[in-house]
Structures are given as structure tokens and as C-alpha cells.
Amino acid sequence: MSRGEFINIWVATIDQINIPLFLFIVPMFTFCGTYFPRETLPPILGTIANLLPLAALVDLLRWSLGLPKFWLVELIGLVLGIAIFSGLAWRQIYPQLFR
Image (tube, rainbow, N blue to C red; front, side):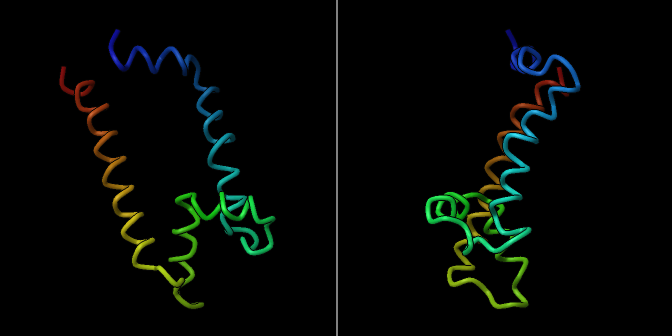
């Protein structure tokens, strides 16, 4: 079974593409400070929200209000995450494109 067939097992219809969106992306937007400050969250949710990648991006996009304490670490983490996940996506897609 190829990797493409394995993914087709999980996403059989176009409607199932919404599942990751509503399970991961919407909660990340809700908790990472895009709509309200993370400082108002309960401590456990604030800790979890600070670990999500969108929190670092939100902090860096608010640079005009003052850079976060460890802005360079957040920037390096975002760039590394983009590089790693782009490489993984390329490894998954490349064999499907050039069979």
C-alpha cells in the first residue's frame, strides 16, 4: 500500500477535510491570542497555548507593541518548523508527482 492510498483511507470524501480544521486550527486561533490575550486564560490553558506555533507568530506580528522577551528563539522555531514540515510534505508529495 502506497502512502497516497493510506491517506485515502482516512479522507474518503471532501467533507472530511474539515475535520482537521475544526479539531486543530480553530482551537489554535481561539487560544493563541488572536482574539483575546493569552494572559487571561487559566494557567494550564495558557501554558498549552504558549507551546502552539501560532502563539509565536502572533507575538511576532505584534512587534509594534513591543517584541516578546525571546523573539529570536520564537523566530528560529518558526523557521525551523516551516523547514521541517516543508521537507516532510515534499517527501510525501514528490513520489506522487513523478511516478
